[in-house]
Image (cartoon, rainbow, N blue to C red; front, side):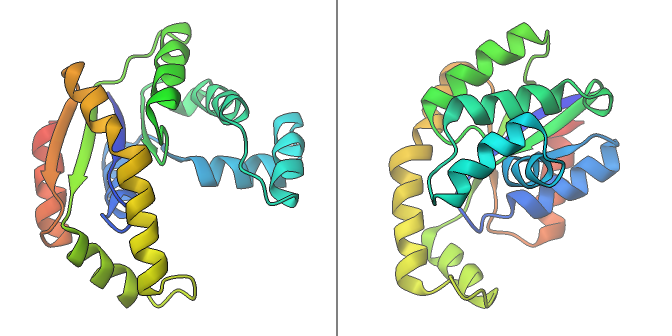
Length: 183
């Protein structure tokens, strides 16, 4: 059983690695983006609320995201473990998540921080060829990450949950490191 939170900058490999690990441990990879898209597609009451914000180009409020995560973590496949990818994004969300996990009697085992130098991240994201991945946009996303999300590292470190993995390795080497941490 594993309950993991993946943190790290955009392009660090969180999504790729969480899919590998989720498959090998037979637990769900829970991405907030996927949860939102699924709730909207299924037209759940929370999905309809989220759709309203998204249609207006607004960020979905933290409380609504927490409610969606509560709903997702309550599903049967999440009882034996999960990997959260993309949430929490800031300390306030982490505090909300702590309360939620207490309510659900589910603790987080570890928070995995993917550490990758900015220059490597820029190169990786430029090579993906996505239309929104230009150098200026990428550097701005990294700046926003450092401002808003990086404080999570201190938050989880102070709770002795944080494990940092060198994400500047091959996919296989990162997967090996992850498996050692999660064994």
